[in-house]
Length: 218
Image 1 (tube, helix red, strand yellow):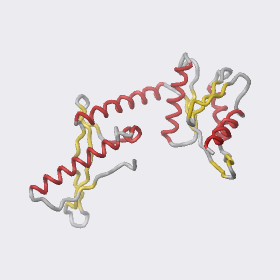
Image 2 (spheres, one colour; image 1 turned 120 degrees about the vertical axis):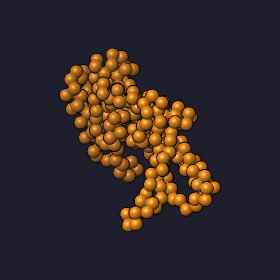
Image 3 (tube, one colour; image 1 turned 90 degrees about the horizontal axis):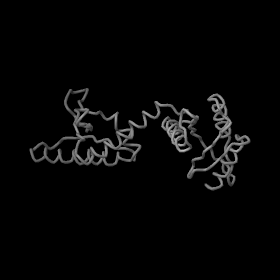
Image 4 (tube, helix red, strand yellow; image 1 turned 135 degrees about the horizontal axis):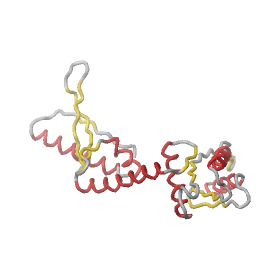
């Protein structure tokens, strides 16, 4: 059924082609359209909208109605690249920006996208190093009862003590950890640290301490 769905998708994509255009499947659910006659962004946008409209209707496979969404990255020559490899990479970056927004749509490649993805790649690489070098720190934030003003427990929060940049807060690296799967290692660091703390507290005769630990759905 999956193979037949891919065939049906390619047939709909062909409806958007003109003479001289090329359609190719890169693998998985990724397709590439090469449109040599298109010179203006406005014309590329019209074609992208046409493709999105093609996907609004369901696909019928073995009497099952299947809805498919499309994330489209557009790379224009020469600003997005001078070679096919550069154009392919630029279109892929733009496509992932649409996927990150979690919506049907299209995006043109621009330098802001390039800078953003490059920065994210650096954070991913440095986060891998931080996990092995022990730069992640777990802090316990107090949870206070609104009724009694008494501490009811703690919530474990993780921070990254970056040697050159100082303290990096969770919002700046947790989303990237989620995307790359590193969040599993981050979660294990938090849980192990909290368990060690609780063990130390119990040895010091501090028994009834409740600590909340947040875990990724992964």
